[in-house]
Length: 394
Image (cartoon, rainbow, N blue to C red; front, top):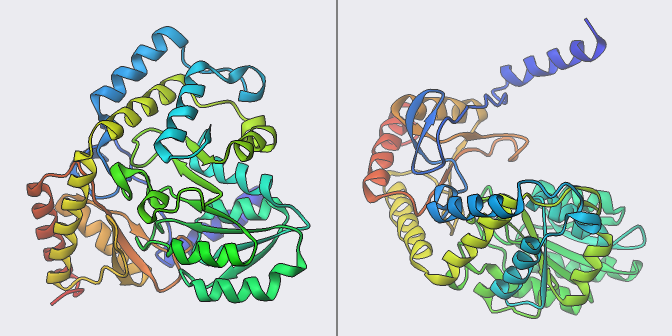
């Protein structure tokens, strides 16, 4: 047996024994309130499809029409021969949607963070990062070579303290936070974070992956939600959640965005977003600008589900968004709970270490505008039955 297989086999065995092995299920249908998963029809409480756009006919039609005129792949990086007029249209539309001077799109939200952070800071600089920031922020910070100073989660006083202690040692400083935290569903206190960053003479970046399409007027995101236009230096986002497609975006001042086009490595060294993806994103922007109905339905569904889960006795943590963690603690219990839900007809995966801290395992329920009231009531009934069977609720 090759050496690599020997140690990998042992590590996989350890994961399974600890209840940390992720058994990946296979979906055989479009995203929506209900899915075909491993050959079974189940209620979908897993996807980040906040507004139900992943299978929206207008997005599909836009993708098909664009392929007829522009083909499929751009066949190049954007800095050489991969920038199509569709890409420029999406850049302009996202700048207008976000209320900023300019925007630039990337292959994913993850790629956007890998582009932005190393372009803003380097070895002579420092990053002040919320301790629960997403892995893409962590990886972008590491790639930058800058010093990394973590501050306590959603704690502006902690941020102010580390800025006071460390800022003067470095050339430039960048404060980075998620807008909505993907595992807990809580929201960064962005006004206070901005005030601390501004006082500490640091740039401010927010990753609004789970806020776009959810917070703000018509889903314009956390900066709009808090009325911080012109105060956040760069807002990173994704098209893979509320927009229902795939891709990433960075929005801010015109000069900053121009700099990202010159020095953002995923922009320079990886092929541009595909034609159908860009066209579908443009159609999603049309829908969001045309009506707030889907955003309102998302929040109505969220309020219903979370209120009833709390009445049943479940611990939904500190969430104030459609992300609804059902806190269970141990990884094995979370895995067993997820399996029991699936057998009863609900698809809701266990989230365990290293995605969350040890002892903080959970089922993460993702509410969508695509869910009907009947869907939510059926899901609540199944959660109640499984919770009592496994002794989670009385």
